[in-house]
Image (tube, rainbow, N blue to C red; front, side, top):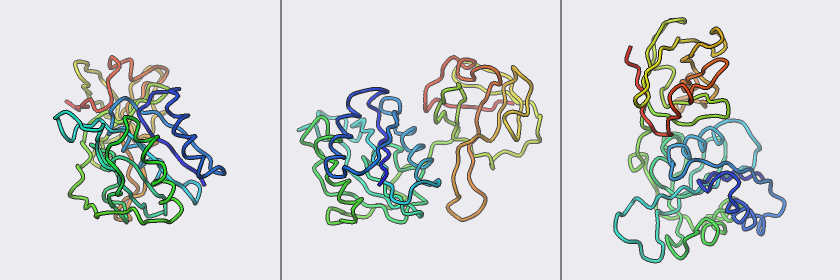
Length: 263
């Protein structure tokens, strides 16, 4: 069994170790992979749920995610209550268990074959992903669905916000939520991109390395997955500065910041 843990604890945060211990108590033979997203970034969480879940991998897979900004109710919280737990089943059999908050399910809402709430406490601990949720996630991975609750419909889940920064990789490439198929540009077309207060010239490319050193490319990136309708696979646009960092070029934008093509 293979478990991907996606959470906003922070890179190297011992919280990952604590959660891993709880999962391995019930599944000592499992392999666990950890992925840290920015604090409260449900957009990055949802992006990686889809990227990991909808693409090829081990046959028995669970994505266990926790990014719970507790923004569903602005009032003071009782007993550390937060957004509820959810379950999704992807077309390739991958199971997804985690907090339904913000955009966590947005990228898979049209792909999921099953979308349901999970009947576990919404409170009881400040650290619910360690103290409350693991037994439910393990039960679901083992085909025990007794805790499943009401169905969720795609309409109950927000759509993916377009034209945003979805992720910044280790090379400074900026992954966006601009679908490649929405652009009708010829290779080597010059464009102008704005992120925040920074504006930069770029060159549209059908492959990031097909630009000279030092050139900012606007190109279909390495991220994407099969389309829900069985058509051409979905690919997301990336900003790539060959020999440098697009993230630095745009003054280190945050995930969810708007990306605008102004020319």
